[in-house]
Image (tube, rainbow over all chains, first blue to last red; front, side, top):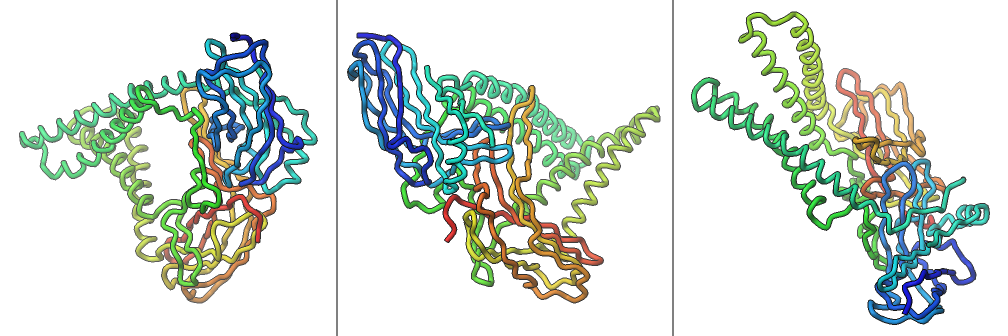
Length: 144
Length: 323
């Protein structure tokens, strides 16, 4: 049994990053470790978060528990996910407020530290505009 | 537009700093509450002993009530943050059912008292309620002039040798107090003589790219000389700056939708029907605890010889494809 670092990876189906409010985001995620591990916390969620001058506002729109506490996970674990985006709020690129949508995979082995993987997506009807943002920017996916 | 996708980790939610804020609120609330209770007690005692007239209590109760209410709110709210599970920065799980109506979306501003107008369209609510605005002005007026009145009484009738500088200093405060009284009288006169205005919108909420009709009204038949109406979208962000909390207002869009000058006749109650279009790339309405995006229609009407009308009406733009 290990509490060694985990490597997390999330991918949406066909690498799609721009969705419309109300769409279902599907894909798979993979968690790699040196050994089988026991779950303390293992969830995947869709959340939005504000970015800009103001204090951060954020909320989880949909959350799915991958494995319950105490369950065992093999060293290489790949699993599909499906999360529905709510109709509101939409991704926003204002002057002072940005609203970002993120798929967050959260894993914490028993006795180990927390691991996160955040995959930015967009939930918008202005699909072309946001698709250009994703095409133009190098993505820095946060990982522990 | 460049923006960073690097986001703070969920594990770094600054819960400790929020709890400190709760402690500060409680600490600052205590002297407010104590001062209010002490002043109320002193006034009642002086009234019972006959040193001041019972009539003074009419001013003392609202005056001390402001201190008691503010202090009490700070202690209760601070205590909730400090000792409870309340953490405004932690992400909360809020699920919106598919196909639900915008009224149930938790982060879309609620439209207060929305009802149908005479044209069968949605009657938009005032951004700031007339009654609430007037009550706030009256409370500020009582609070300010209560302090200035007590100080004036003490300096002019009790103190024999008041320095001239102190009288000048008090005079400045007295002038501000008179200005506040004038504002209250002006607002009451506006309500009695010209009333407010009303705005109806053919559908609400609107969507980016949507077109709608807006109907502009005055509540009463009044002679008007000039009318201007504009549509405005603003972002409001609240953040901590040192030990203070600041709110910035950034206008994202402001556009005139109606303008009529040199009017010279008594207006009918309904005087304009205006088409509006929401831009395709419009920001959608949003209300978080520290960030919000609002849409409003501002209506300014010049009424000769009477107080002018200057009202703002809220409406919402929701995510969606225009039909």
